[in-house]
Image (tube, rainbow, N blue to C red):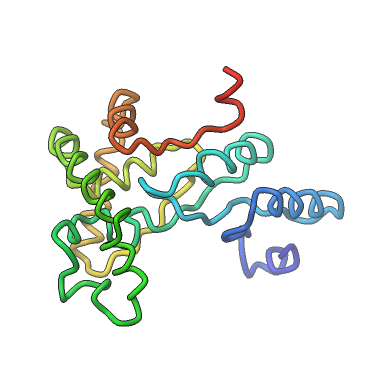
Length: 195
């Protein structure tokens, strides 16, 4: 990757779905041989998938500056609200190749997630935003998140999701605590247990 960057074919390089140990090893090898280390990790991050970005990556963020470029802030559309009453025929989850997503949505865990989303709706309403905007802003508020990759299917979805930027200043610690109290899935690091 150092060669690719030195040739002007890329400005930086990052990893995707690597463990914290693999990223640290790549960083160490790059430093040892005077090469360019990775600057970011592409990781899944949303209201229901938090462990890696909130527990494993912060140490890398603080020690070596590796940021998180997160993807799937709406959990493959689950957080969009369109699956609140089942799987609509026009949705991605209704396609044969997305059977895994449909199974996830209609599972017991999927129903629990939909109930939690209903409980989050009043927070979104109070902040003057949609549930997808709240979810994207929630991702952006994490100090280790450098960017959030949006997977919009239509220009309207993209515009709605970009509205999260206006919600971000409203993501106070009080609002984040309210969300955590509803989700009840905040991961804890070893540091949290020592306090």
